[in-house]
Length: 180
Image 1 (cartoon, helix red, strand yellow):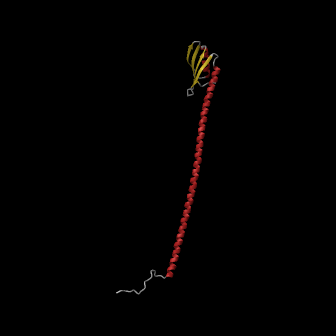
Image 2: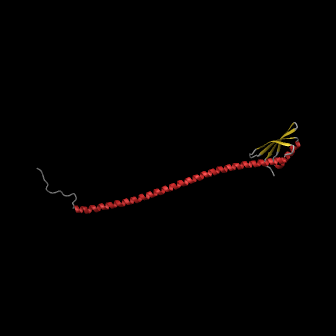
C-alpha cells in the first residue's frame, strides 16, 4: 500500500517572502556598502603605494643624475691631475735646463784663454756632479781653472792630468751647487 501525504511541505524559510525580502535586501545592501568601503580603503592604500613608488623612482633618477655629475667631475679632476703632472714635469725639465744654463754661463766666465773644454757631463741625481774634460797648453791654466771652479762651487777636485804632446788633458769633478 502506498502512502500519500496530504499535508503540504513546509517552506524552507518559515518566514513569508515579504519578510524574507525585508531582511535579505538590507543585508545585501550592508554587505555591498562594506565591500565598497573596503575597496575604497584598498584603493587609497594602492594610491599611497603608487605615490611612494613614483617618489622612489624620482629619488633614484636624482641619484643617477648626481652620480653622473660626480663621475664627470671625477673625470675632469683626473684630466686636470694629468695636466698638472705634465706641467710639473715640464717645470722640472725647465728648472734643470735653467741650472745647466747657469753652469754654462759660469764656466764661460771662468775659463782661461788657452784652455778648451772638450766635454761636460752632468748628473741630475742627488749628487749633481759635473765632470769636465778639457785640454790646455799649460798646467798653470788648468790650475787657474781649478781655482776658479773652487771659488764658485763646493767639492771641486782634479781627477787627472796627462800630457799628450803639446797639450795637457785634464779631468775635473765639480759639485754643481754653484755659489754666486
